Image (cartoon, rainbow, N blue to C red; front, side, top):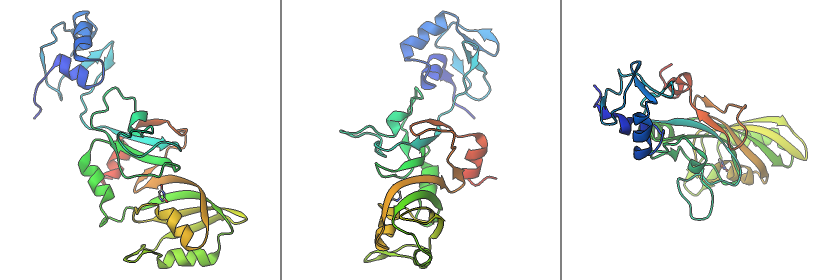
Length: 240
Ligand code: URA
């Protein structure tokens, strides 16, 4: 069952323009419903069965949005901030209805960040009980060793009352500066940086590659984003 929505609201909700702008577009004949030009802004639309076109482009009524952002360094993982640009401000969908980032990456961290207004999905992905794996690539100051791999595997005490779950550390290249991949199952504040601090090493660069079944699309440059595909969304929701 879908509640009927006025045509001007339908188009405004989908980011086509403000309510008064879309009224003008409708009156000018730029909108079709089920193949017929409609000029009445107050006509009621069935959001599921009606096929709405604006300038011959189909406009599907979606109230939940899912974006994959390749977070750039220098932007904060928040919805609003008094001083810095936020990850939500990078999404220029025209709607931006209640979008928020699912979890946080540090200001200097890059990589995969899911931006959505689906509170239920966010809740499931962030639940500490779910142990959703997060994979990071990092460049580390110093030689990462097999002992570090063992330490990460045994769990690291970060706080008086917090020991990390066993984490997987893969050394991609060891040297004065080492390249690694690490998989963690929680999302504590500065977790990867603090885990390396615990083995007396410094993270020089950090990038998230995946979160659960969602993998960063490497064709996205830092700062770029795209909608999740149906396939990605189903995977993330555990339907495939
Ligand atoms: N661990 C960190 O230290 N920083 C991040 O941004 C993410 C994980």
